[in-house]
Amino acid sequence: MTIPIPAEDPRHVPNRAVIDPSAITQNTRALTGLLEEHTALMAVVKADGYGHGMLTAARAALEGGATWLGVAHPASALALSRAGLDVNILTWLYEPHTAETVLPEVISSGINVSVGSSAMLELVSAAARQADRRARVHLKIDTGMGRNGVLPEQVREIGAAMREDDFIEIAAAWTHLTDADDPSDPSTDQEVARFDSACEALEEEVGPIPLQHLANSAALLTRPDLHRDLVRPGIALYGYPPVPTDVPLRPAMTLTSRLALVKEVPEGTTIGYGRIRTTDRRTRLGLVPIGYADGLHRVASDRCEVLVRTASADSRALQVGRISMDQIVIDLGPDSDACAGDEVFLFGDAEGAPTGPAATTADDWARAAGTIPYEILTSVAGRVSREVRA
Ligand SMILES: Cc1ncc(COP(=O)(O)O)c(C=O)c1O
Image (cartoon, rainbow, N blue to C red; front, side, top):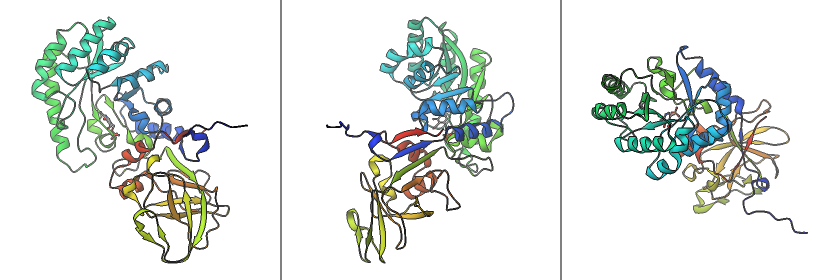
């Protein structure tokens, strides 16, 4: 009998991104604890919940006290709404094709839509007419990011257009800060000043703005004066504060694999493409079937440790040589008792660890790759199955 095995069936690959929803719930609770009673928390669950699974992250954050969910794509917002989550949702990134095909249902589902230009306002207005329902609009103000958003000097004109459109309801004004993760950078105060004067101008056109929001994780943690009506943390929910903090936050994703083989090699053995590593002693090498096609960053090659769980203990092992597409090699040391099948923690929380060393974090991988943990978490590939910890 032949057993059909699809090419990339995750059941037959040991790589897992294990998601701990209780970490997201506790992180959200810890963050809501920093807020005044009138400030709500929008859990940013875009990019598939920063790689953790959008619905898993959303449900966990709602349990922790979030009352809003934020996503870039309207289709993600619809998926949240269709999942029956009874919560305010905001979506902010679309172009004409998406606006035509998706926004009417988004608006008729009561999802809040961001507008960042006059052309976007026209798209939302047309979709609202098609849905025969007023669109709840958050006007995005570009205070220094130079991406999505109207320039402060355009606020009066777009405000007037919004006021005169029966299908538009002004629900909020908002902006996104460029440098909140560096509290010493004066640009945050400059951007806030631009936002505040744009909001004043907007209010002169449209009357009181129901909500103002601008704080990401960094501003939530360092600038209580910027919390306003709503804060929008993303990365901190997943356990990676972008600024030093005493708030207890723990990583929600653990990336694991298993040793495919272990072999003893002599001093002078070269490892991987380009032979960037040569052993300087007799040692035992472990082969782990996870590589850059699974989300490890090749540029981080030969620099990061992983945690290996053998029958006797947990221990750290350096990843050696270039990271390949599907595999890496780790140096287990000459006396390791590791054998094929043993679990390897690439980063995260090695649950059930005895009194051994802690696992590497996405921060460690980010430093080794010259990037940020956001990119490490969202790089974990679709072929790595997500397993939700009970
Ligand atoms: C518009 C917007 N708000 C909030 C966030 C959350 O930012 P952070 O993950 O730094 O908290 C993001 C993420 O980039 C975003 O794009």
